[in-house]
Image (cartoon, rainbow, N blue to C red; front, side, top):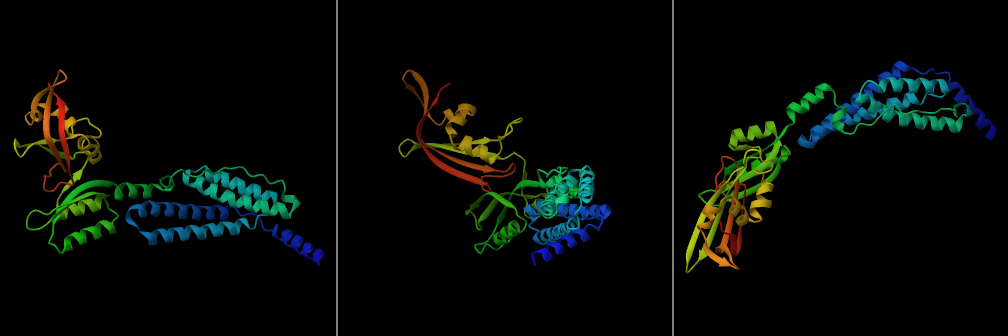
Length: 338
């Protein structure tokens, strides 16, 4: 029985060697796989922003079918000559560009698996040695063709913007806007609500695809944000007996500053220590809120019972439609007098 089985295996392998390797068919199958990989990479890039899952699944299925076709072709390779021909075809194909090279890196693993299987079944294939002509791409964008790159460049730029809307207590407009954000994968960076007035005002600082942002700003109004957020800081000092004094300070990004004008900068610099920032940049105005004292031989300005309120808004915004606001009790603080 064992001898009969061995003869069947040898007969099968011998009959398979009669099939000559078809380089043209192999190249055609590589083209199919490359296109499937490219389409999958493109829809993957799109899905990150538009969630087009159907398009991604269709492209992935196409790539899977092309990979199965490749495996069927490789399944007919049995001789050293066919392996050498397949290797040469892969090397020539890989030289055409990043997408081709990436495709070859995938197919070479299949060819190695085939060589390993044949080597264990047929001594004549033991000398097969595979070199690596392919190279996996570092990022999906490298797998796109020129048309896909143009589409990504045109359709998928992401911008930041601020918009505000008034709504009734039923929040129908607000819920509709949030549904639009969700449907188009807009990211809310900061939001605030202002309950003053007849209807609440809701403000959103968000990012999204440019064409989506343009449509929203065209409907609701608002501003595109390009590192040009501004702020108002209100410092209040004094108390019940001495009376309270308040002063508003306007802060805008300066020309040439790479981070000033971003929400993170206002939080980490101005909000963290408003008295220090204002003493360094608006000393003469800040000094009017305090009294001069001599502390250990140094002249200081005392800000008694100081509190700070901060509103961050877009370049055309106001305190009412600020995207971010906070308040803090500073207590009694001293700043160096000048």
